[in-house]
Image 1 (cartoon, rainbow, N blue to C red):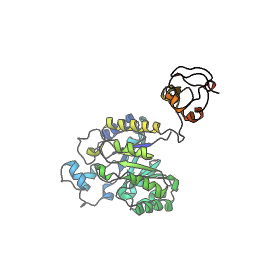
Image 2 (image 1 turned 120 degrees about the vertical axis):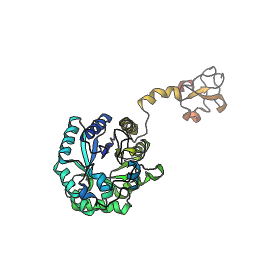
Image 3 (image 1 turned 120 degrees about the horizontal axis):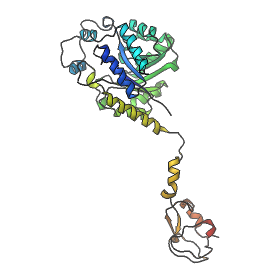
Image 4 (image 1 turned 90 degrees about the horizontal axis):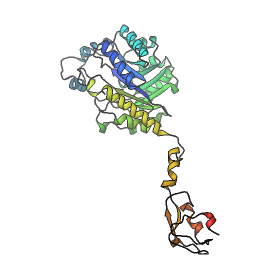
Length: 339
C-alpha cells in the first residue's frame, strides 16, 4: 500500500509562544501525521524594515499597523526553542521539520540534524539558497507556488548541480494564496509537474477544508502539506487558512482510507466479491416446461439468479442441443441435461 507522507504545517501559528508550539506538536501527533513543520528565520535576514505586509496578512490579522518586519520579529523561534521543540517531537513520536527562510537558518537546521529540507515557494528563484541546501545532499521537498514550469526545472537543476541526488527531490504543486479559492487550485498542474520532471509529486494546500488534499492523493500525490492551528480565531496571519485539530485528524483519516482503496493494478474479484458472485450473477434456466428430445431454441431460455449454473456467456452453445429428459419451467440447466 502506498503511504502518503503527511506534513502538518504549524508554521508561525504558535504566535511566538513556545508552549503553544508544543501544543501544536501534540495536536499533530494525535492526528497521526508524519511531520510537524515550523518556520526558522532571522527577521533581519528575511525582510527589509520597509517591507509591507502581504494583502492576505493584512486581511487575516485585521489591521495594517505592523510592517512585515515587525510582524515576523514577534514570531521568531530561538535556537533554544528549536531544541525544545525537537525534544517535544521525540516525546510524542512525531518527526520535527522546519522551513528555513535565510542562509543562516539553513545552517542552523542542518546542524540540528534534520533529515530533509522543505523549500518554500518564495525561495524557488533564490539561487544562493538553493545551492546551500543542495550542497548537503539531503532529501528535499520543493514547493512551487507562483512558478512556471521552467522555474521549477531551474530550481531542481540548481539543487542537483550543487550536489543533491535527483532521486532525493520531491516537488509539491502549490498555490500561494491564503486561503486559496477552489478555482485557483489547478490540481492538474501537479500531474504536469510529474510529466515534465519525472519526480515524486505532492500538494501543499492552502484551501479551506480537506477535500482538495484528499483529491490530490487520489490523483497521485505522495506528499501532502497542510496548515493547522489550535484555533482559527487566534490573531496572526495564517490561522484563518488553517485546519483545527479535529479537522486535521479527519483529513489524515480520509487520506489513509483512500490509500487502502488503491489496491493493486490487476482487475480481479475481491474475496468479498467472490462470495457474492452466486447471488449477483445469473445462470441459464428454462423459460417453460419442455419435453425429452426437445431441441433448445432461444425462446426456451431465460437468464436468472443464482449464478452457479451454466453461464449466460455460453448461451450460443446451448442453442440446438437436445434435452435428455422432461423438465419443468425455471429448471436451472446443467451440461449433463443436454446431448
